[in-house]
Amino acid sequence: MTQQRDDLIEAEKTLLHTIEEINNTAQRKFLETFAKIRTNFIVTFKELFMEGDECDLKLEEGVDPLEATIEIIAKPRGKRPTSIDLLSGGEKTLTAIALLFAIYLVKPSPFCILDEVDAPLDDSNIDRYTRILKKFSDNTQFIVVTHNKRTMEAAQALYGVTMEEEGISKIVTVRFNEEARVRSATVTN
Image 1 (cartoon, rainbow, N blue to C red):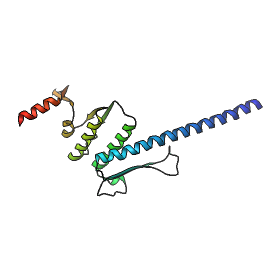
Image 2: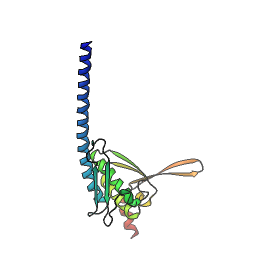
Image 3: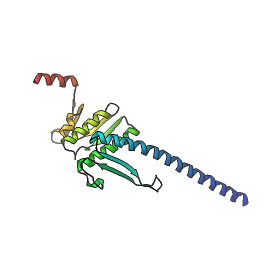
Image 4: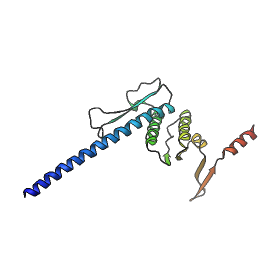
């Protein structure tokens, strides 16, 4: 009985040590990744907004980082909202896009699907959105689901669904060629 009791006590110590080691590793990796995302968020936010605009990501202090609340701060020039909820729909969307791409920069993917991300954006914000898509499209293929004409104009290829006959869907594909765009632009002048 004494041997079994000692084995259980030793197993408990080993288990507690392993849990502590896992927590320390998880906290370290989380804080490293959080710092990278925070830096990327600030840079990407300024690309989408303007150089003088402010943003930040802050962890709740005095709490285990793995359980802490993350505060997203976004302050476009001329506005000093006390909460992200006070931003316009377009500003919230651009802030979310900046955060999405900040995370993406830490762990890039060969493709990304964005479904109606641009819906709340006006024309000037659509231009900012498409500009950042073009920047990241060197390394990632974006599949963008949209109804926005300006977003479609920035695409290299369009895929649509049409229904020429009732009940029969047909996929339509249009690929854009930069040379063809240049030639058609010069012909119309």
